[in-house]
Image 1 (cartoon, helix red, strand yellow):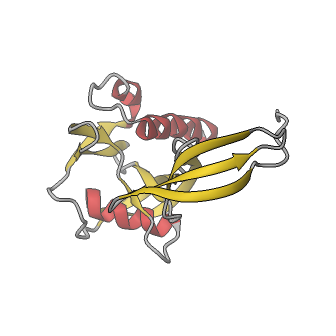
Image 2 (image 1 turned 120 degrees about the vertical axis):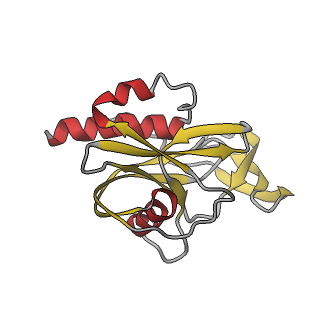
Image 3 (image 1 turned 45 degrees about the horizontal axis):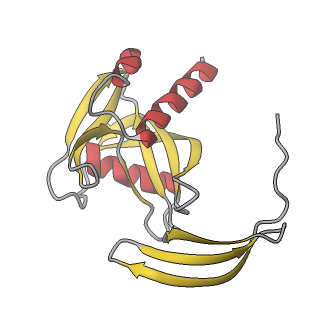
Length: 187
């Protein structure tokens, strides 16, 4: 089923950087919509490289997750391995690198489940959700400030993850549900 799309995005009349940090650039946009309306919007300008989130499944049918510190919530969260795509990398190459850095495994098989937008009204970042299977041990040094805790979770008990108080990141929840859809269609 397809919905009617707007044919023409608004015209950007002006763009100005209003704030900048080491991680973020905020810009103000003056927009003119096709119906003549004009509005000011602010957005966080991304680097355009994108990111990956990997849903690794071990030979023992376990999901491999990581528990890591999250500055935004100032606590530790349980989620799937993830990271930025480095210049020149494909999403699968980035996924394999991040997997090795964060959980100590590489994968011989990847499936790209979906590319998600993250808060598209304010942020132009995209994240590729990948399933990784046929894992093999290999460790790379990552950029984390402390060792990540790897948590093995039985795939058959995936629904119980949704009840975990520290499994709250929307991208990880979406990845888990996309995985279930993928596994159902593969069966």
